[in-house]
Image (cartoon, rainbow over all chains, first blue to last red):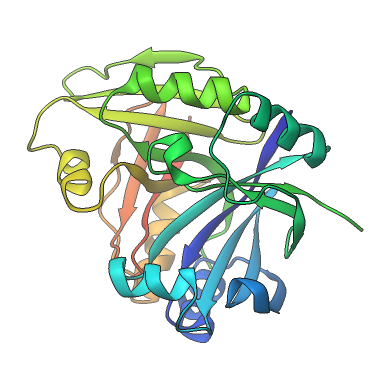
Length: 133
Length: 134
């Protein structure tokens, strides 16, 4: 079951440049910053009420985020919804024949995560996340 | 600083609202709570509550609508973020003081709301509405 919006993700050229707007002008506190090698990004989470804004800066020119940036420029990338049982959620999605990018949950910045294919929601890339301590 | 309160909703541009809504409900269990066409507008909106915020499916009804122009360029997908503030005038003034391009406040499409739009140039390509609920 979907509990809430966990974060909305934005691709930017440079985290430092984007902090000028999202952290300094909008005043969103920086919660976490990390390099996620397997996604080819440096990622930052900034707190907005009870969810977060994620900024993604590509560090691997061959990665999906770098290709997104090259093709479309900076902008909104995906929506992540929080669930408390990602295994059950994935099993249900497979049963219903929903197109997935990840067949199994993996570790991401938001916990255990998986991505659904954008075709499943008419162009919207959806991520599911089960936070882990 | 603009003292933002919370994410209010995420706007998703769609060509056909009912088809899109079916996929969201079937896949994720997010159900349409309401579909309506704001008075005087050329857009149909559907709201799908998701706990702390809602997904707004937005279907333009004329080819010259800005959502239609967006989809002609990029296809269907996430279009903008609506972020709630307590005091819209103060938020706009504070952002302008920091050099952010923001439109003057105007009535929003959801009842009891007013909004101002932050220029994409200022926000790294993201259409953001600041929204105040009455």
